[in-house]
Length: 278
Image (cartoon, rainbow, N blue to C red; front, side, top):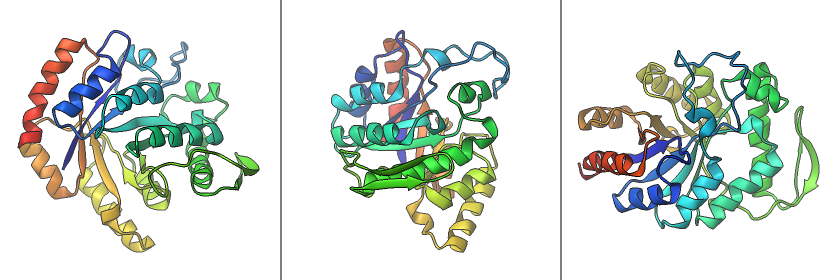
């Protein structure tokens, strides 16, 4: 079981470079950072968790910049998007950004992806809410061409380009692991279709039922279940719970960090560190 961290980093919380150094020094395997390019002021779309949307959703740093700073001061710590809202980017630009971070970090990037929950946010990027997963799928397929082909081209419904050169190529071959961050049955189907991992949120679904579905779909579609990483967001920070998750087939848990100052974050890391030792 790998134990990583996730956070909404802001200019009033711990600096990403400091967090990266401290996380690696304590033996954590990875650091994941979320993404929202912006939050529309309309607030038409309700916050999925209920109540008022926390301000960290629009105050957080751009994830690739923050992750690059963490990667620059570490040697082993894996860095990941948790998650990147793929439909809000053009695949040519995003493919280069992903490959650059993977190259500069020496192959330590984990590409957590999702389609988003805020309809207005997606609309501001020209993406209809009911089309977001179709756009994401096309974008992933187009980026795979950019990462693996010298003369990359793609012709789809949403993206269309003749042969192009996109360099550098990722260090990880054929590309960094693509991990879908969603909890529905459709998400599991998408994982088996075109991704390398699944990233549900604790409590968002019946985990045992979804893992059984994952195994069945892998068998039906000829994929090796062991090659699909399962990473759980917001895992309960208790050894018994983590041991049970490992038995179920979870490969990585991401312990949540609050958006607080450096001192409080370091205290939290020290408490979490006992799980690594265990």
